[in-house]
Length: 187
Image 1 (cartoon, rainbow, N blue to C red):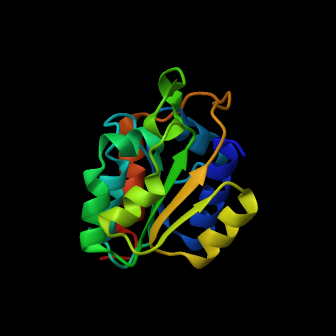
Image 2: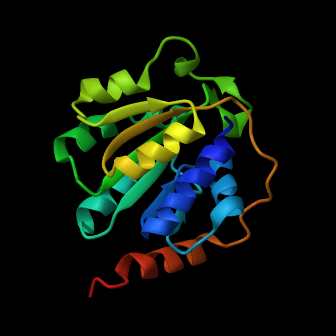
């Protein structure tokens, strides 16, 4: 399985359920934009490692909305503290999906610690997150997304990036349309 295939499945589920979807920086954002652009997607264009924290904050601020965050292995390794905070807050409306390709895919595929010995699922469990799952197949990912509404799913994929165009929406427009979606039906 490659990352864009996993992103497509996650995006389709988020769209079908009306979930807000946060994507980590770099090429994963471009892959999400290419496969399923919609106002309910927030594309991180900076701040590596903070998608999980932004998704958590959003889920706490808007408990009536379901929030899914797509984070990469390199990004979550930069902000492991977010796993402990997710565990301590344990929002029922927040799902963190870590796509682990064992590389920093957006900067040249340099290996991450997960390509050696680091086990992100074990780290999530060790942080106190109760619902942690791991998969390396699309079929299992589809089933997990159907069954799991909160916690962490680690999706193991092959290294590599899809050749997709850049996001042709300016950051201000991304924010404006996403905030309109966040505020919809909450006044």
